[in-house]
Length: 159
Image (cartoon, rainbow, N blue to C red; front, side, top):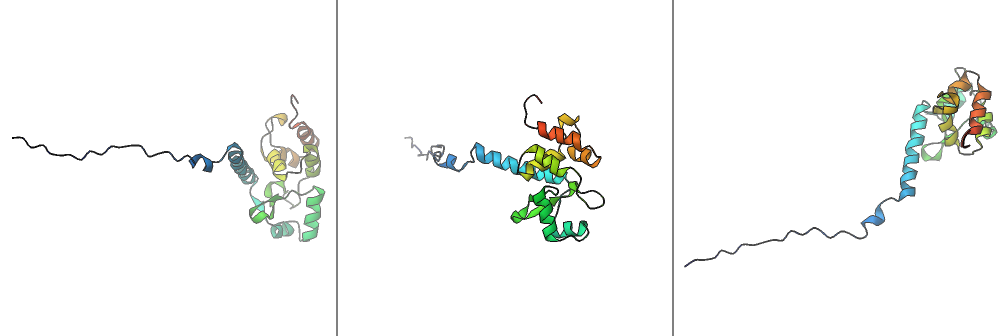
C-alpha cells in the first residue's frame, strides 16, 4: 500500500498595496520647491559662498550693522536668507577693495523683483543676452549699461 505524504503548500501572494501610500508622496509643487532649493544652493556656491554680517562689516572697513542694513535696503548690497533665516552676503558681489560692485541697484531695479535669490541667479549664471557671459563679470569690468539692459529683457519673450 502506498502512503501519501502531506506537503504544506504556501501560496505566495503579493502584499496588498497601501491605498494611503500615495498621500505621502510629494506633489508637483513640493518637488518644484525642492528643485528650487537646489538651484539657490548651486547659485550660492557659484558665487563663492556667502559672508556673515560680521565678515561684511570687517570687509567693508568696519562699517556699522546699520550701514550694512541701509545698503541692503537701498539696493547697493545684496543679502540673501541663509540658514536660520539670517541674512548672508554673496561673496561674488565684492570687489578686491571690499566694496560691492557698482551697478547692483540698477540691475535689481531692472529685474523688477524683490526676490534676492532671483537677483543672485541672474548675476552668477551665463546670460544668453550677454553672449553667454556672467552678468557679475561684466559689472566688475564696468559694463553696467549692458547688464542693466539684459536684466530689463529677462522674462520678455522675443527680447
